Picture: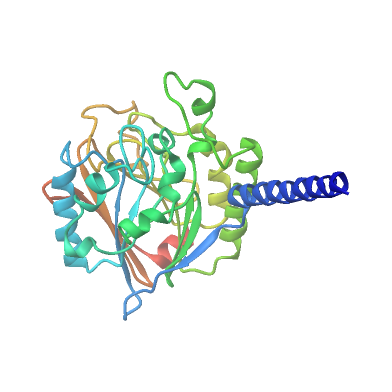
Amino acid sequence: MAVNFNNKFSMALSSLNLLITIAIVCLVSRTAFAELERFEEPAKGDGSLSFLVVGDWGRRGTYNQSDVALQMGKVGEKLDINFVISTGDNFYDNGLTGTNDPNFEESFTKVYTAKSLQKQWYSVLGNHDYRGDAEAQLNPILRKIDSRWLCLRSFILNAEIAEFFFVDTTPMVDMYFTTTKDHTYDWRGITSRQKYISELLKDVEKALMESNAKWKIVVGHHAIRSVGHHGDTQELVRQLLPILQANNLDLYMNGHDHCLEHITDTESGIQFLTSGAGSKAWRGDLQTGSNRDDVKFFYDGQGFMSVQLTETNAEITFYDVVGNILHKWKVPKELRSAM
Protein backbone atom coordinates (compact mmCIF):
# COMPACT_ATOMS: atom_id res chain seq x y z
CA MET A 1 0.00 0.00 0.00
CA ALA A 2 2.86 2.36 0.99
CA VAL A 3 4.71 1.57 -2.24
CA ASN A 4 1.61 2.36 -4.31
CA PHE A 5 1.18 5.68 -2.47
CA ASN A 6 4.81 6.61 -3.04
CA ASN A 7 4.51 5.83 -6.76
CA LYS A 8 1.42 7.98 -7.10
CA PHE A 9 3.09 10.80 -5.14
CA SER A 10 6.17 10.63 -7.38
CA MET A 11 4.03 10.72 -10.53
CA ALA A 12 2.07 13.70 -9.20
CA LEU A 13 5.28 15.51 -8.31
CA SER A 14 6.73 14.82 -11.78
CA SER A 15 3.55 16.17 -13.40
CA LEU A 16 3.73 19.29 -11.25
CA ASN A 17 7.36 19.87 -12.20
CA LEU A 18 6.47 19.44 -15.87
CA LEU A 19 3.69 22.03 -15.60
CA ILE A 20 6.04 24.47 -13.84
CA THR A 21 8.67 23.96 -16.57
CA ILE A 22 6.09 24.55 -19.32
CA ALA A 23 4.88 27.69 -17.54
CA ILE A 24 8.43 29.04 -17.27
CA VAL A 25 9.12 28.33 -20.94
CA CYS A 26 5.89 30.06 -21.94
CA LEU A 27 6.76 33.06 -19.77
CA VAL A 28 10.24 33.37 -21.28
CA SER A 29 8.82 33.03 -24.79
CA ARG A 30 6.24 35.70 -24.06
CA THR A 31 8.95 38.00 -22.70
CA ALA A 32 10.98 37.67 -25.88
CA PHE A 33 8.33 37.44 -28.56
CA ALA A 34 5.11 39.01 -27.21
CA GLU A 35 3.42 41.80 -29.14
CA LEU A 36 4.81 45.20 -28.19
CA GLU A 37 3.39 46.57 -24.96
CA ARG A 38 1.59 49.90 -25.26
CA PHE A 39 1.54 52.93 -22.96
CA GLU A 40 -0.52 56.13 -23.10
CA GLU A 41 0.70 59.68 -22.53
CA PRO A 42 -1.78 62.56 -22.88
CA ALA A 43 -0.88 65.62 -24.91
CA LYS A 44 -1.31 69.12 -23.50
CA GLY A 45 -4.68 70.84 -23.44
CA ASP A 46 -3.98 72.50 -26.81
CA GLY A 47 -3.03 69.15 -28.36
CA SER A 48 0.71 69.90 -28.49
CA LEU A 49 3.56 67.81 -27.13
CA SER A 50 6.98 68.73 -25.71
CA PHE A 51 9.73 66.42 -24.49
CA LEU A 52 13.47 66.13 -23.96
CA VAL A 53 15.82 63.49 -25.36
CA VAL A 54 19.10 62.49 -23.72
CA GLY A 55 21.36 59.47 -24.05
CA ASP A 56 24.58 57.88 -22.79
CA TRP A 57 24.40 59.59 -19.44
CA GLY A 58 24.68 57.44 -16.29
CA ARG A 59 28.03 58.35 -14.68
CA ARG A 60 27.04 59.39 -11.14
CA GLY A 61 27.01 63.04 -12.21
CA THR A 62 30.57 63.08 -13.57
CA TYR A 63 31.76 64.07 -17.06
CA ASN A 64 29.37 67.05 -16.86
CA GLN A 65 26.30 64.82 -16.46
CA SER A 66 25.09 67.05 -13.61
CA ASP A 67 25.64 70.18 -15.72
CA VAL A 68 23.62 68.71 -18.59
CA ALA A 69 20.90 67.74 -16.11
CA LEU A 70 20.79 71.31 -14.77
CA GLN A 71 20.16 72.73 -18.24
CA MET A 72 17.62 70.02 -19.00
CA GLY A 73 15.71 71.16 -15.94
CA LYS A 74 15.69 74.77 -17.14
CA VAL A 75 14.57 73.92 -20.68
CA GLY A 76 12.07 71.40 -19.34
CA GLU A 77 10.45 74.10 -17.22
CA LYS A 78 10.39 76.61 -20.09
CA LEU A 79 8.76 74.13 -22.47
CA ASP A 80 6.53 72.54 -19.83
CA ILE A 81 7.59 69.11 -21.06
CA ASN A 82 5.32 66.08 -21.03
CA PHE A 83 8.08 63.49 -20.51
CA VAL A 84 11.74 62.59 -21.11
CA ILE A 85 13.16 59.99 -23.51
CA SER A 86 16.43 58.18 -22.83
CA THR A 87 18.15 56.67 -25.85
CA GLY A 88 20.09 54.10 -23.83
CA ASP A 89 23.44 53.43 -22.19
CA ASN A 90 21.68 54.50 -19.05
CA PHE A 91 24.32 53.28 -16.58
CA TYR A 92 28.09 53.11 -17.12
CA ASP A 93 30.32 51.33 -17.56
CA ASN A 94 28.55 48.01 -17.32
CA GLY A 95 24.88 48.66 -16.64
CA LEU A 96 23.46 47.74 -13.23
CA THR A 97 24.55 44.79 -11.09
CA GLY A 98 20.97 44.28 -9.91
CA THR A 99 17.88 46.10 -8.69
CA ASN A 100 19.70 47.09 -5.50
CA ASP A 101 22.68 48.65 -7.30
CA PRO A 102 23.23 52.17 -5.82
CA ASN A 103 24.25 53.35 -9.29
CA PHE A 104 20.54 53.62 -10.15
CA GLU A 105 19.88 56.36 -7.63
CA GLU A 106 23.35 57.92 -7.85
CA SER A 107 23.17 58.28 -11.65
CA PHE A 108 19.45 58.92 -12.04
CA THR A 109 17.41 59.91 -9.00
CA LYS A 110 20.06 62.14 -7.42
CA VAL A 111 21.13 63.78 -10.70
CA TYR A 112 17.87 64.68 -12.47
CA THR A 113 16.37 66.53 -9.53
CA ALA A 114 14.75 69.54 -11.23
CA LYS A 115 11.00 69.85 -10.74
CA SER A 116 10.41 69.87 -14.50
CA LEU A 117 12.19 66.51 -14.85
CA GLN A 118 9.88 64.75 -12.37
CA LYS A 119 7.93 63.39 -15.30
CA GLN A 120 7.85 59.92 -16.81
CA TRP A 121 11.13 58.77 -18.35
CA TYR A 122 10.78 56.32 -21.26
CA SER A 123 14.01 54.41 -21.82
CA VAL A 124 15.58 51.76 -24.03
CA LEU A 125 18.62 49.62 -23.29
CA GLY A 126 22.02 50.37 -24.81
CA ASN A 127 24.97 48.05 -25.34
CA HIS A 128 26.55 49.12 -22.03
CA ASP A 129 23.29 48.27 -20.24
CA TYR A 130 23.47 44.75 -21.66
CA ARG A 131 26.94 44.33 -20.13
CA GLY A 132 25.35 44.29 -16.68
CA ASP A 133 22.12 42.83 -15.36
CA ALA A 134 19.93 44.00 -18.25
CA GLU A 135 16.78 42.59 -16.72
CA ALA A 136 17.30 44.69 -13.59
CA GLN A 137 16.53 47.84 -15.61
CA LEU A 138 13.32 46.20 -16.85
CA ASN A 139 12.25 45.19 -13.35
CA PRO A 140 9.21 47.00 -11.84
CA ILE A 141 11.11 47.13 -8.54
CA LEU A 142 13.05 50.12 -9.89
CA ARG A 143 9.76 51.95 -10.42
CA LYS A 144 9.11 51.60 -6.69
CA ILE A 145 12.47 53.24 -6.01
CA ASP A 146 11.80 56.02 -8.54
CA SER A 147 8.35 56.10 -10.16
CA ARG A 148 9.67 58.08 -13.16
CA TRP A 149 11.59 55.09 -14.47
CA LEU A 150 10.13 52.98 -17.28
CA CYS A 151 12.44 50.82 -19.37
CA LEU A 152 11.52 47.89 -21.60
CA ARG A 153 13.30 46.16 -24.45
CA SER A 154 10.77 47.40 -27.03
CA PHE A 155 7.39 49.09 -26.61
CA ILE A 156 4.98 51.66 -28.02
CA LEU A 157 4.01 55.02 -26.54
CA ASN A 158 0.82 56.65 -27.81
CA ALA A 159 0.91 60.39 -27.11
CA GLU A 160 -2.16 61.36 -29.18
CA ILE A 161 -0.61 63.41 -32.00
CA ALA A 162 2.54 61.28 -31.97
CA GLU A 163 3.26 57.59 -31.65
CA PHE A 164 6.67 56.41 -30.46
CA PHE A 165 8.10 53.00 -31.27
CA PHE A 166 10.96 52.06 -28.93
CA VAL A 167 13.18 49.40 -30.51
CA ASP A 168 15.77 47.17 -28.86
CA THR A 169 18.65 47.59 -31.32
CA THR A 170 21.54 46.01 -29.37
CA PRO A 171 20.69 42.37 -30.23
CA MET A 172 20.72 43.32 -33.93
CA VAL A 173 24.42 44.27 -33.88
CA ASP A 174 26.70 41.36 -34.83
CA MET A 175 29.82 42.49 -32.97
CA TYR A 176 28.19 41.95 -29.56
CA PHE A 177 28.01 38.26 -30.42
CA THR A 178 31.15 37.77 -32.52
CA THR A 179 33.74 40.22 -31.12
CA THR A 180 32.92 40.60 -27.45
CA LYS A 181 36.53 41.23 -26.33
CA ASP A 182 36.51 41.19 -22.51
CA HIS A 183 32.82 42.05 -22.21
CA THR A 184 30.00 39.76 -21.14
CA TYR A 185 26.47 40.48 -22.33
CA ASP A 186 23.25 39.53 -20.58
CA TRP A 187 21.18 37.80 -23.25
CA ARG A 188 18.62 36.27 -20.88
CA GLY A 189 15.17 36.54 -22.43
CA ILE A 190 16.65 36.32 -25.93
CA THR A 191 16.85 32.56 -26.31
CA SER A 192 17.09 32.67 -30.10
CA ARG A 193 18.70 35.80 -31.51
CA GLN A 194 17.45 35.41 -35.08
CA LYS A 195 13.91 34.63 -34.00
CA TYR A 196 13.97 37.56 -31.58
CA ILE A 197 15.09 39.99 -34.32
CA SER A 198 12.64 38.58 -36.86
CA GLU A 199 9.67 38.86 -34.50
CA LEU A 200 10.70 42.33 -33.37
CA LEU A 201 10.97 43.64 -36.93
CA LYS A 202 7.57 42.13 -37.78
CA ASP A 203 6.03 43.78 -34.71
CA VAL A 204 7.55 47.16 -35.55
CA GLU A 205 6.47 46.96 -39.19
CA LYS A 206 2.92 45.96 -38.23
CA ALA A 207 2.65 48.72 -35.64
CA LEU A 208 3.94 51.37 -38.05
CA MET A 209 1.56 50.24 -40.79
CA GLU A 210 -1.43 50.37 -38.43
CA SER A 211 -0.52 53.72 -36.85
CA ASN A 212 -2.75 56.68 -37.63
CA ALA A 213 -0.67 59.14 -35.60
CA LYS A 214 0.15 62.50 -37.12
CA TRP A 215 3.83 61.99 -36.23
CA LYS A 216 5.62 58.63 -36.26
CA ILE A 217 8.84 58.44 -34.25
CA VAL A 218 11.19 55.49 -33.66
CA VAL A 219 13.64 55.45 -30.77
CA GLY A 220 16.64 53.10 -30.66
CA HIS A 221 20.05 53.16 -29.04
CA HIS A 222 22.15 52.69 -32.16
CA ALA A 223 22.32 55.19 -35.00
CA ILE A 224 21.12 54.32 -38.47
CA ARG A 225 22.99 57.28 -39.95
CA SER A 226 25.87 58.96 -38.13
CA VAL A 227 29.16 60.69 -38.86
CA GLY A 228 30.25 60.22 -35.24
CA HIS A 229 32.69 57.69 -33.80
CA HIS A 230 30.64 54.57 -34.58
CA GLY A 231 29.21 55.74 -37.91
CA ASP A 232 26.24 54.03 -39.57
CA THR A 233 25.02 50.80 -37.97
CA GLN A 234 24.99 48.56 -41.03
CA GLU A 235 22.70 45.93 -39.48
CA LEU A 236 20.05 48.62 -38.97
CA VAL A 237 20.60 50.05 -42.45
CA ARG A 238 19.90 46.59 -43.90
CA GLN A 239 17.10 45.40 -41.63
CA LEU A 240 15.31 48.35 -40.02
CA LEU A 241 15.71 51.30 -42.38
CA PRO A 242 13.67 49.81 -45.29
CA ILE A 243 10.74 49.30 -42.89
CA LEU A 244 10.95 52.89 -41.68
CA GLN A 245 11.20 54.30 -45.20
CA ALA A 246 8.18 52.30 -46.36
CA ASN A 247 5.97 53.48 -43.51
CA ASN A 248 6.33 57.26 -43.60
CA LEU A 249 8.45 57.65 -40.49
CA ASP A 250 9.15 61.22 -39.45
CA LEU A 251 11.96 60.97 -36.89
CA TYR A 252 14.50 58.35 -35.82
CA MET A 253 16.14 59.22 -32.49
CA ASN A 254 19.18 57.45 -31.03
CA GLY A 255 22.23 57.70 -28.81
CA HIS A 256 25.39 55.50 -28.92
CA ASP A 257 27.60 58.12 -30.53
CA HIS A 258 28.52 60.59 -27.78
CA CYS A 259 27.56 63.66 -29.74
CA LEU A 260 24.61 65.61 -31.13
CA GLU A 261 23.64 65.17 -34.78
CA HIS A 262 20.96 65.92 -37.35
CA ILE A 263 21.07 64.06 -40.67
CA THR A 264 18.34 63.99 -43.31
CA ASP A 265 17.50 60.88 -45.32
CA THR A 266 17.53 62.14 -48.90
CA GLU A 267 15.36 59.23 -50.07
CA SER A 268 12.46 59.46 -47.64
CA GLY A 269 12.82 62.65 -45.63
CA ILE A 270 13.33 60.81 -42.33
CA GLN A 271 15.26 62.96 -39.87
CA PHE A 272 18.02 61.06 -38.04
CA LEU A 273 18.60 62.72 -34.66
CA THR A 274 21.45 61.64 -32.38
CA SER A 275 21.28 62.67 -28.73
CA GLY A 276 24.01 60.68 -27.02
CA ALA A 277 25.86 63.47 -25.23
CA GLY A 278 24.40 63.20 -21.73
CA SER A 279 27.82 62.94 -20.08
CA LYS A 280 31.14 61.83 -21.59
CA ALA A 281 31.68 63.16 -25.13
CA TRP A 282 34.33 62.45 -27.76
CA ARG A 283 35.92 65.66 -28.97
CA GLY A 284 37.08 65.63 -32.59
CA ASP A 285 36.05 62.02 -33.14
CA LEU A 286 34.04 61.98 -36.35
CA GLN A 287 33.90 60.14 -39.63
CA THR A 288 35.04 61.57 -42.96
CA GLY A 289 32.19 63.05 -44.96
CA SER A 290 30.76 65.13 -42.15
CA ASN A 291 30.41 68.00 -44.62
CA ARG A 292 27.88 66.08 -46.76
CA ASP A 293 24.70 67.86 -47.78
CA ASP A 294 22.54 65.48 -45.75
CA VAL A 295 24.42 66.34 -42.52
CA LYS A 296 22.57 69.35 -41.18
CA PHE A 297 24.35 69.55 -37.81
CA PHE A 298 27.10 67.86 -35.82
CA TYR A 299 28.47 68.74 -32.39
CA ASP A 300 31.11 66.72 -30.52
CA GLY A 301 30.37 68.02 -27.03
CA GLN A 302 27.88 67.35 -24.24
CA GLY A 303 24.23 68.34 -24.43
CA PHE A 304 20.69 67.19 -25.16
CA MET A 305 17.72 67.77 -27.44
CA SER A 306 14.16 69.06 -27.14
CA VAL A 307 11.23 68.29 -29.42
CA GLN A 308 8.02 70.31 -29.74
CA LEU A 309 5.15 68.95 -31.83
CA THR A 310 1.81 70.29 -32.91
CA GLU A 311 -0.65 68.94 -35.45
CA THR A 312 1.06 71.01 -38.13
CA ASN A 313 4.68 71.62 -37.09
CA ALA A 314 7.76 70.03 -35.54
CA GLU A 315 10.58 71.95 -33.88
CA ILE A 316 13.81 70.20 -32.83
CA THR A 317 16.43 72.07 -30.80
CA PHE A 318 19.90 70.97 -29.67
CA TYR A 319 21.52 72.51 -26.56
CA ASP A 320 25.06 72.38 -25.19
CA VAL A 321 26.19 71.82 -21.62
CA VAL A 322 25.55 75.44 -20.58
CA GLY A 323 22.17 75.70 -22.30
CA ASN A 324 23.20 77.50 -25.49
CA ILE A 325 21.08 76.68 -28.54
CA LEU A 326 23.36 75.03 -31.10
CA HIS A 327 20.91 74.05 -33.82
CA LYS A 328 17.19 74.48 -34.44
CA TRP A 329 15.12 72.80 -37.14
CA LYS A 330 11.47 73.53 -37.93
CA VAL A 331 9.28 71.92 -40.56
CA PRO A 332 5.55 71.96 -41.33
CA LYS A 333 3.89 68.56 -41.32
CA GLU A 334 2.45 69.22 -44.77
CA LEU A 335 5.95 69.74 -46.21
CA ARG A 336 7.22 66.57 -44.50
CA SER A 337 4.24 64.56 -45.83
CA ALA A 338 4.96 65.70 -49.38
CA MET A 339 8.55 64.41 -49.31
